[in-house]
Length: 454
Image 1 (cartoon, one colour):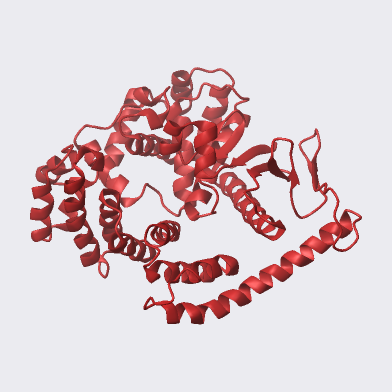
Image 2 (spheres, rainbow, N blue to C red):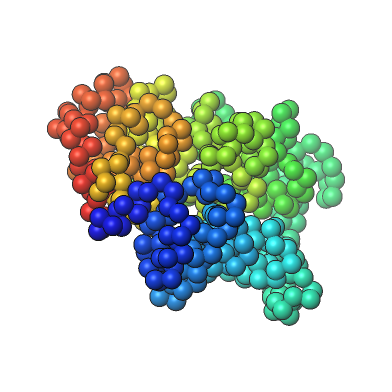
């Protein structure tokens, strides 16, 4: 990276004129780097809108030739101003770079923010049909306005979506009938359902297909590895069965992925509490709700904005499950440095998403920080929550890069041996020296070198 580009990326708040100049020159990579770490809140509203325009122009210009950079520019454009064209470009770039979770999230946001735009309902319906989500596709396609240009295509797809939804409804009806039969009820009868029992030995006996309602007002579904809890939010039986089934499948996937990556996973059941955005804000506080996709606290995985199960939600489940596994492996109350605890979870999340490193925009920021000697030191990331750092994204990326460096030096088994030693009371610096022959200062140097090369 040239000194000129480095100066751009390290500038805290590049002026509006710089965005316009770089767009005129079609210097798209320089434009992205200039605003990769800029905070939209540092600009007046009029300037935010003006900066979003050249970023969007770059996204649209690169869609055909460089979907990854187009995505990076689109993400920045939407961060500065959420417009319908900006969200559309972000969706196309996300799909072009195999980021379906982000595409779905942007489509849902567009559907809520711009309900008169038929594109969002149609494209979300297509995406959900590809995922065999008939009810979801019906819900999206029926929101395409009748007079929109996309209305005709939406009507055609609705037939297929309703067919899938009907199949799902029949399957749920069969499950409900089986559930009633197993609980000794007459067909169509009422009664209180008992669906699952967790024993004191860590095993679970499932006696049905659904969940039970607890005294705290939360529905609970239990299996051998997870105790899933969520507020009902007026879901009927079929909706609950569908939601719970997808959640349990995602959690099982998190378990299997963690075991594959680390060679071990958590063996005792862990509580998983799923919140809507509003519920998370109420139970965990406004400040945390703004910055945390999820957290592991009080021996429970707590997921923010889990009303819909997107790819990002699944990735967050993986991340927080790693924390739950580390908690058990270390016996609780462990003294792992924050960067190791968070970095391992972040690295396993990267691999779940099919990558060896962070998304392109964060990787560029990490590289620029490394080359500019601006990376946070691991000692600074050892105790406090990473979300409280001046640049949380950089803190997480630095931590995960450090973990990747350790894994590259001896595999996951060697790293987990270090983790276990620290969990049993060995000081981290001593364990690092014993297992890797390193001190933290040398690891800092190796991490900075690796990040600068990328």
